[in-house]
Length: 142
Image (tube, rainbow, N blue to C red):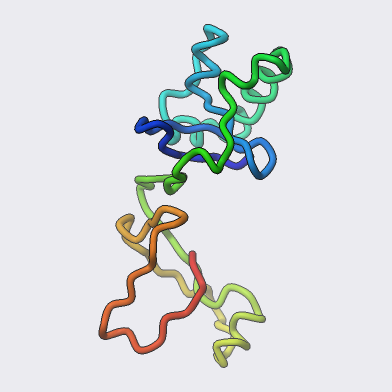
């Protein structure tokens, strides 16, 4: 299940992708069906596999003709970062052989663990800004 935060018609909301081009607006869907849904994206993510079951069961009972009320085309929204405020971001460096070879680095005996601040999270179309002191900016993201 792929989650999405987005802005549609000036309002921020959240949902899940259906395929690559559609987003199911969960708050709208819950309102239409009169069923409770998680209050925000963090609550949805914290449900884990239960969230996928909730969405599958809810959509399974829905007539296809009603889907236009809660399904958005991804081209009609501005996508935001899916998880806006994680409690921490823990990353692993050189965590696969090809990456170590590409970096011309020896495989570490133990995992290289580092953290990133939550301010490093960008929206999908937001530009990455390179500070002047950075000599080489690489494409890899955590």
